[in-house]
Length: 115
Length: 109
Image (cartoon, rainbow over all chains, first blue to last red; front, side, top):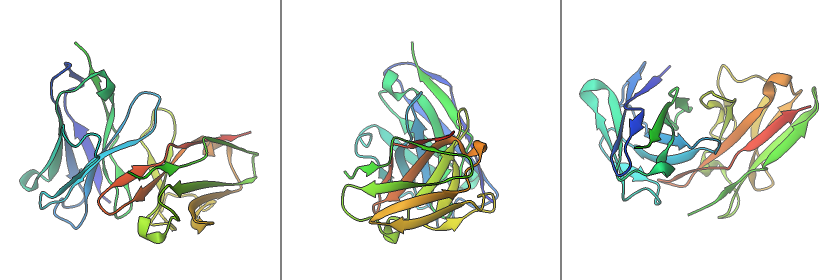
C-alpha cells in the first residue's frame, strides 16, 4: 500500500513562505489519483488545503487559493506545497494524503510560524 | 462553499451502539459525495476507517460500518470498545472541492 512522508522546515517566519514536500512510496505518483494537503491547527479540526493531479492540475480551498501552490515531481515520486505570506494562523500540523482511492495519510509535520 | 456538519460530541457505553452522522448544507448526502470516515486519537495522524460510503480497509475493525441514512452519511459503531474513544471526522467531495466535517468527539463511558 502507498506510504507518504512529509518533510520541510518546522519553523517559518511571519510573511515568509512555507514549503513542504511529500515523498510517495509503494505506488506511483502518476497513478490516477489526486494528492492532497490537509492541515490541523493546534486543538482544532482538519482543514483541506488542496489537491494536485500528476498532470499538474490543481484544486485549492477558496480561502487559501491566493497563497497556495501545489506541484508534482514525477522523477522523484513526490509532490509539494508552498504557502506564501504566512501568519501565526498558519501554524498547524500539515499532512499529505491520498484522499481518494482509500485514504492514506502521512504522519504529519508541525509547522510553526514565529519570528 | 458547502458546510459539512457532524455531532460535536457523543457518548456510548462499552458494548453499546452509536451512529455518527455527516450532513451537507447543500442537501442530501449521496454516494456521489464519496463519504469518508476517519478516526483520530490524540497525537496521531488520522486513520481512514471507511471510504466511498461503505468500503472498509483491512485494518478497520468489523464493528465499524458506513452507510447513508436519512440524507446523511453515517458511521455506526456496534459493540463499542474503550479504544474507540477518539475524534471522528467525515469528508465529502464536491467535484473539485473536499470539505471535512468539524469532527465528533466520541466518549466510551
